[in-house]
Image (cartoon, rainbow, N blue to C red; front, side):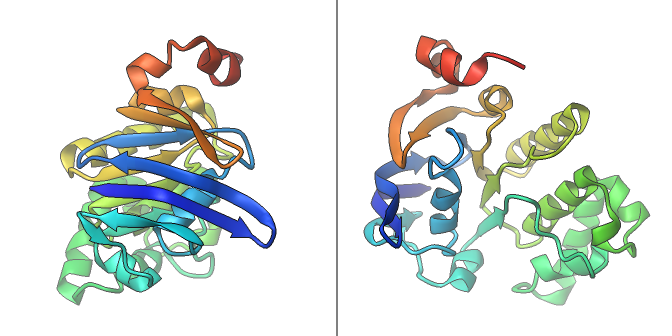
Length: 234
């Protein structure tokens, strides 16, 4: 579904990604793990068009990805950003409407009801301002807002960030549900490597802007260097 071919991204003189290549097949959950500053968020931002690659190319379903954020969203790619980034002064319902802005109104309303079935707490307080929600509720809303565009590929950037362990467990269950029941392909950037390995089909390890390892999650989680670097501790 997605082919990233030798992309390089720089911020001024700082090289964030160096000749990175990876692929994502339809129906997969692909996790990207790595330390802070490894380039994980830059990778997702490049796919969704927020950041432009200086070198390389990205193809989506065999076609070069458009260079416009709006066009990228229109072809079926949704980005759930780090820190949730909900619109704090808008209600839950208004946030969801913003997520479906490219779609006809009838489809927007139908999808809002689908999101409410997925996240019942959102329906119970649909008129509440997003800025007054808990971190877990805001993450539900951020995911729901992504679903509103009817995506075929979703990019998740640190969905567990700042959340209690029990809430994290629920968020990852929702992510798996979207993958299995709605057939949404996913790229997951996550520092909680244990959770990332638990739900991913394949994993890429990004270090200093370069892919160092890749493989099936079931195989890499037994790699001694992966265990030592990412899977030990709490």
